[in-house]
Image (cartoon, rainbow, N blue to C red; front, side, top):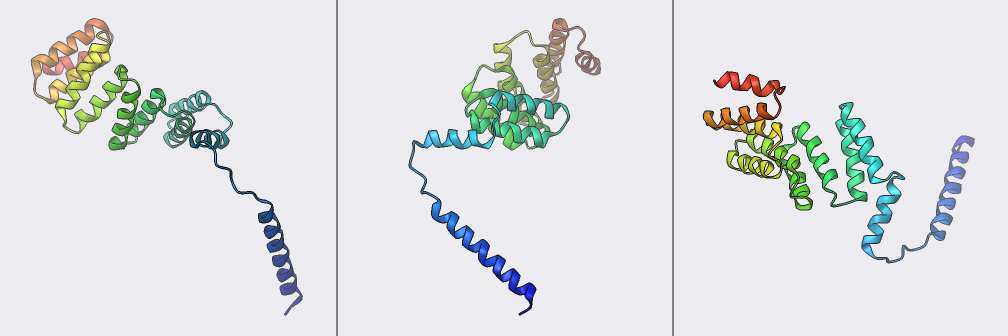
Length: 196
């Protein structure tokens, strides 16, 4: 055996011994309340609060770094489960990355926590419309209007759905209502011109 091989063998034996010593000092984890353990492990993951993580995710989203935003929001969700805002934002980012099936799952979870959020209903309607599920899309847009009948974007989205469904007169009404609320909504004006 060469001197180098002897040195490597000695170093390996030394590190193996140190690892053995370290293992001997470890203690078995104690049984605690499982929800407390979940909170501890989520808190140990990052020193940031859920609010700070959401703010960082918003910044990443504005920079179009969807993967970073999603990672930050998933961490916030681990720290504060059942938060409808966090669940909605995860769904929205998934929708932007064309993972509509998973986005719908998160929107549904968000609705379980806050069924009165018009933006969740609008977003779900958008996916259902894209998938050709017009009845579901219409149901969510109606619910959104029941929650806030002064949101021009909802009327605009409803108009787009009506065009897809070949309900042109209803689409015209929706675009007109959107423009009545916000005369500067150029998109609604353009779509209205196309079908008039």
